[in-house]
Length: 180
Ligand SMILES: [Cu+2]
Ligand SMILES: [Zn+2]
Figure 1 (tube, helix red, strand yellow):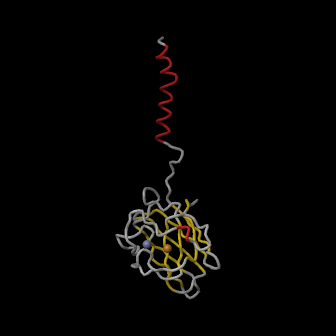
Figure 2: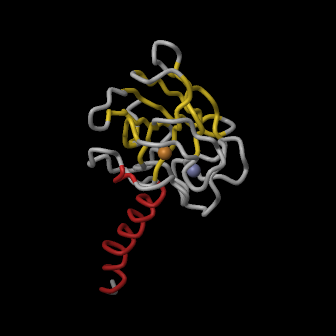
Figure 3: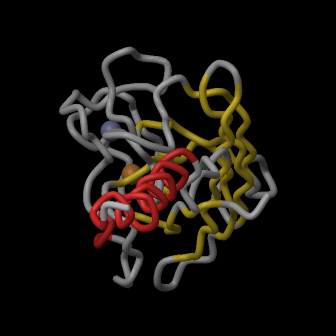
């Protein structure tokens, strides 16, 4: 038998088949469908909480519970970097804005991807949020994975550029892939 043909049969063809298998079933095939950020207070603040992001039919469901707030509205955003290493939360950068849009409200068509609007705390200082966001994604150029989440001191007025005039940063967290 022709030696080259033999090598082809024994080595090359199985290698190609294996490569094809890997292509169809990569080890990391599991798509991200849920993410979470645990929020820790910035220096001398006492705001704690969490926010989950879960893929649903019409977008991403955002559910949050934050404690330790003053009653009323507080700006709530996804910021560019997942870096809460600074005392004041400034290392997360500005609002996450991969599409280069103006600052606006969560229901606006033209907005920062990170514009989640406000959370509103009750008299006990607890804020809960639950809505479906049509702009958030877990992959592609607008992916929120690995970005930062900030709870602000003041209300986001949903129009002042580029911050919504929401004031200082009370709590910071990083969006990671959720276990379940
Ligand atoms: Cu913010
Ligand atoms: Zn914004």
